Amino acid sequence: MRTFLLLLIGVLINGWVTDASGEDLFLGRVLSVDRDAGRLSVLLIEEGPDGMEGEVNAGEPVEVAIHPDRLPRSLSSGSMVRIWGDLREGDGVLSAARLQASGHGAGGKDATGVRRRIGKSRGQYGGKGGGKGHGRQ
Image (cartoon, rainbow, N blue to C red):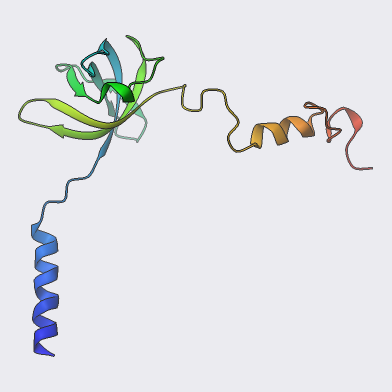
């Protein structure tokens, strides 16, 4: 029993002491893109006090490093991006694991089929549905 208690205390203390680094989510506006090197220059957007999107950070732009294959094709200067990664305070480089350009997430595909079902109820896609007087009788 004592061994179990000591082991449990050790695990709890070890859990508090270790610094587990996780990915953070950042929102920003792209200033420049270097596709060959996988580098972006981004102005981060701060979250306002009420949880709404705030003003653009007036500070220095942040350099984002990501594998060149993970850059979206639609990315250009002025695009809004969501970045998942770690910001290293010392050198000011955001090391990105994933990057998504806002408004281009699904690429126009209907992966879940929801848009098709909604359209079918409105008489689109060849279905009778509820639209144009073809609903329940």
